[in-house]
Image 1 (cartoon, rainbow, N blue to C red):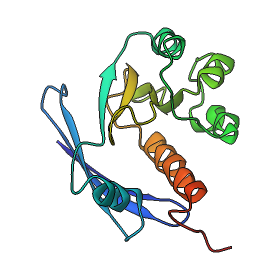
Image 2 (image 1 turned 90 degrees about the vertical axis):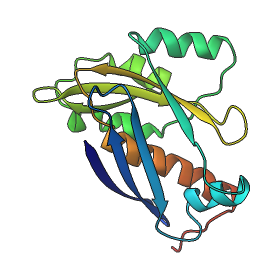
Image 3 (image 1 turned 120 degrees about the vertical axis):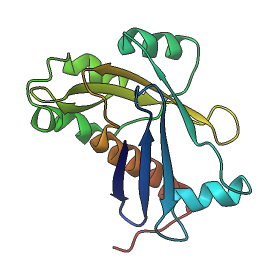
Image 4 (image 1 turned 180 degrees about the vertical axis):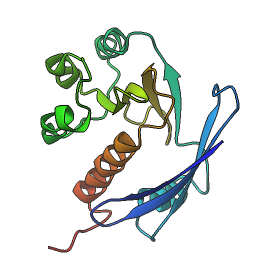
Length: 169
């Protein structure tokens, strides 16, 4: 199975083709930059070529996993406050504790009635360019397209703060 994504930030973008094994145990997204200053191009420049950006690990209890990771000093990517203000609208009837979701900065995506939901969070870079994704699937076998966009925007915001890219007003 293959899925395609066209992700755009304020100043950059990427195309992604995700390949999924028949048993869904292995999922490999291949990302291509849409411009010279995107996070993909920064990765290629900083690490002398293509490579693995992140690895994903599943959990049955993302809240406990995230809380344990934080206790052990693992730094996780932050999510903007407004993301949580829109969760109930984006994923109506999700049934998650919104306060705990927000406190842990966990992302949520999916559709309760049709495909289920998924919960995910990303660490900051742990060694070199590699970071980790922690994901809990509650019936959803997708990539979290809405979260893919949110992650891209989060990394782009970091690029803007570091002066790698600028956004025209």
